[in-house]
Image (cartoon, rainbow, N blue to C red; front, side):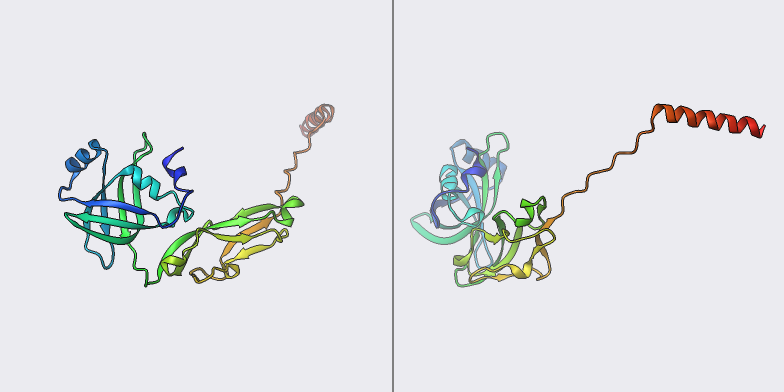
Length: 226
């Protein structure tokens, strides 16, 4: 199972331990990875940026949630004897393309009392009536930006398309998310059922005999003109 696949299942609001670190740069990061740890960065609009260290296995485990890519994490940051708890989201994870393991992570602090804007996937549910008679379902937009409090972030926005006939569409104005505001034009197309592609007509083949007769007639016509 790959790192990206492991992100999709598990428990919500996990905890993750992190250590404050002084050393920065490629050399320091290399030494961390040799010890089985990876470098991390912590920042946010109200936060003082910090360089951290986390265990990559614990990081992967913390991302195994039903929240998909928008999981909230309780990050416990130890600096000496002091431990501070922050609510964060993973802003970016750098993954080793050969080993498929995280090698660096950015944590973004989240204020639970402040609404945020975030991209959420759109999931089409059901088989349209138009598809049953030959139509083709096309999903034009796969994500939508919403505004809500962090605790109200949905894993996805499910859209029932089972009633769509050929020519019907779902638009931004049709989306409904509890406790969230859709930041998309009401007329923007989300999905549509289009007619099946018309079969291309093959060019009519000229019978060999007919073709030969046409050539003879053309030759005779030229002789007469001379």
